[in-house]
Length: 241
Image (tube, rainbow, N blue to C red; front, side, top):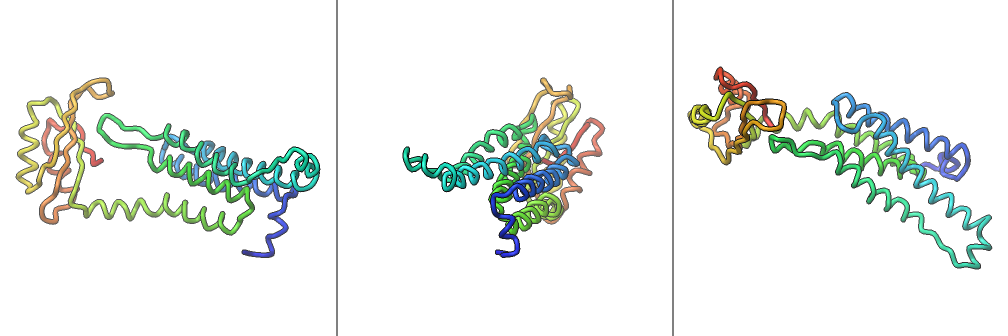
């Protein structure tokens, strides 16, 4: 580690202020990236999670320092000991409840919010590192987390486009058209694993829909399948999930 930063790892007022400002800055940047994608947890949520984790770590260090100095005599008399790592462990456990609240399964059987939940967890871990004064880890961790959120989706999209398996949500006029859709898919030399029909219910759309689990034959791109099905005038919505 860089010895030049040792004075910032001590429990001083300047060090505390710097760590909290770093937590607000890095947590806010991660949240801003999610905010631009209109995700459940955004700028303020990430910032609060990171700052809260940093405060927890600072509290543990503060109590540990006091037990070794000002409170040393009283602690020795009553046998009080403190494990700083326990504070961080509770943050990691507690953030699971917040992350779970962002995960949902919509009517199309599509899981949403996993990346947001993982981002909140990573933001909390970054806050713990900031609170501990592990600045080198903070910079590297922030760069990696932001890269995962910003750069990897493009690579992921390219990989999925070349994948042979495909889940497709199709919304159409009525269930009588299911046969034509299935015939069209089979004519494209595509194997149908499963069809999950969803009748119009509490969702905004009043039209029935179906989720098709497909195995593409040959090397046809996913866009070709979507384009072919969109030619039907009774198909209102097509979305790969």
